[in-house]
Length: 444
Image (cartoon, helix red, strand yellow):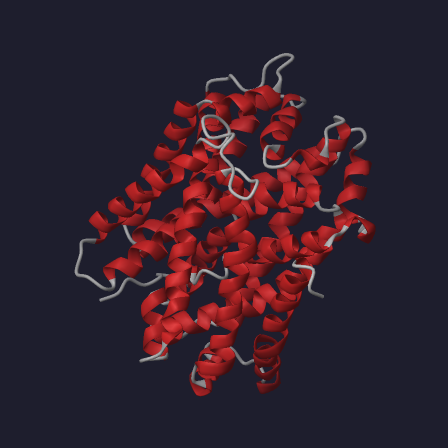
């Protein structure tokens, strides 16, 4: 018998955990800082609600409708066709994503350990130098990668109900609570108003075609759509749960956390004269600066890093789950053995990304380091591509009676609401993705 979520809230928090992690807390602030501030945030919200939310509902419908993991779901719903490639695409994308995602998880693990031992916040500390040391020391970066994956493997090996759900129900509420405390402190710094203006006041003169693509990619990355992760998660769900309500809850929580991340980071950036275009290291250099100004700052930083780590883990769980479930669905292998082997393969694949700031710093793919190339491939090509394929599957191939049934279970939404969602999935989502792609390539 397949594992099941034990409660509705457990499913929502686990799905939110899959979405809320590096996408909302680490990547969103620095992408916003590098792409126009408030204008990027507004585009992100629009893409999340108009494109991301309908796609999330679609993934939920496909997963619960098939009651199978990603690859088997498309095979079951469209037998004898090539649509199963969407599932394979998702597994491959999750694998690549997890390989460099775990590198950042390793950074946070190291920061957390250093913070617990009181060696992050110090007098006259150079946080840029500290971040460079953590990312630039090969053995340290690889060790962090390995430890992060070992912990992820242990949790996922316990399964959906006893592993992922139990962890998410504790980690996610704590993260919300502490994030709000951090925001309250950050907005009270002298000079915080400039940071709030940068983040909340749109300036569309700062937006480029590339920035629009990044905003679209961020909406996919932050909601964990495009790789059929949510297809796998919803396949463990009962018929009494409203999929539109669950998807809306996850989307709103994701936007809220992204808002909190911006409110926590940018006031500090401007208060201390730092650059919002700092890039991937923004969170690791700004947060210690903020906590250094607080009473018991080391304690607060340790708590936040641990909770941030929990959010990263919940996202990693979902990626590891889609890989493991795709394998165990085909062969009668032990789940534990498959998860450990998958973790080992991801570790090996992640080493080049871990060395991108040290040994392989001069090795470039299309002008990018292995880490940045992996990030670009996943966020701006594979995720939108997966979303486009899924939209076409819903609009062209999947049985519409089954779609409407899954959309309607557990709620009293009108037929008009369903029709609106379906037409958005059939026309608006694919056209938007194609237009943004063509614009980025300079064709239109």
